[in-house]
Length: 124
Image (cartoon, rainbow, N blue to C red; front, side, top):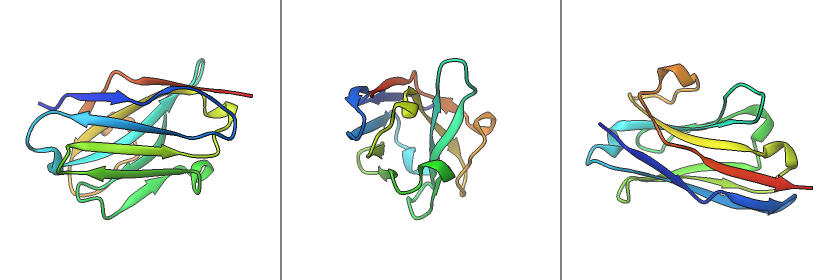
């Protein structure tokens, strides 16, 4: 069992930055690939970024490449999402998720554990 708790969301002006954190419980965090997803009002949940369990390989949604960076610190049981040059269309609830496995994963339905989400609001 893994429990995930996101933090770092909030209200920011367009062009600003935020860093989301997702802290995981348990001693097997390094066994899990991690992903960040987001869901805007009235829209389906979508992949933002994903990272392998060792952190050596990352994936980004095409529209976010160059602005967002996913990273992890397995010693701290934490995965991060650095978000720069934020736009109003980035407004959403952001979720982290964990899945046991050796790859990274982009489909939300394969993930085993989810956090409760953190709201990110970007004002214009």
